[in-house]
Image (cartoon, rainbow, N blue to C red; front, side, top):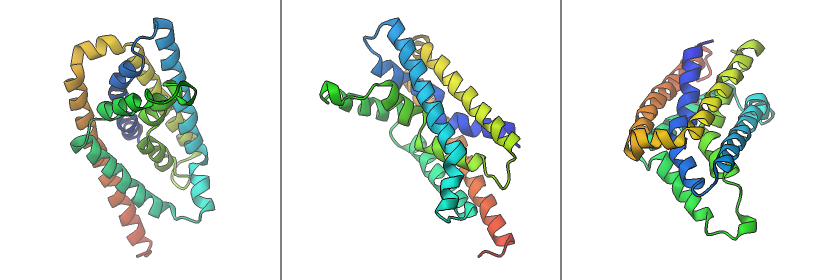
Amino acid sequence: MNFIENFVTLWVVIDPIGTVPVFVAVTAGMSDAARRSTALTATAVAIGVLLFFLVLGQVLIDALGISLLSFQVAGGIVLFLFALTMIFGEPKQEAEKRLADAEEDLPEPDRPSPAIFPLGVPSLASPGAMLAVVLLTDNAESSLIDQAFTAVIMIVVLAIACVCMLLAGPIIRLIGDAGAAIVSRVMGMILASVAADAVLSSLVEIMNAGSL
């Protein structure tokens, strides 16, 4: 198991730094206690969602009769496209701020908690993160111990994201929105490389198995 690669992959798809501006936007006007509660709840929601995909993601794939190698190729392509949006598209924090602003127009009973949306999902537990945890815990290649370590790494990254949210004020003052956008794009480049490697490795395995 490549701990460093798994950590980098999960760090990039979860993007703790990119979540900070979103947290600042959706918790504006809250008391310090409410901001802490929102950060902790968002982290708990993300952990629950990603653990669900980590444990049951491959079961669902098997139930649908999908080849894991095919899923890895598709997943790598999706992660690559996700990385391209980080590099060329609207910065994560700006896109999710816009989603949060749209939520403000909903009537109060229909408005979800900001800890659930957009912080828990899709900021922390993004579609890319859901896909990544499935790919990183392939039952054919990863033992239960390796999968447990991947879960621990995921929780560590989310814990770091929680700390970043709790320290959101000083971080934003330090790097600014422009700095957060730069970090997001650099992370996108790293994710694109990881995704390309995943696709190429899966294609090599398919060809070696004579599946093409």
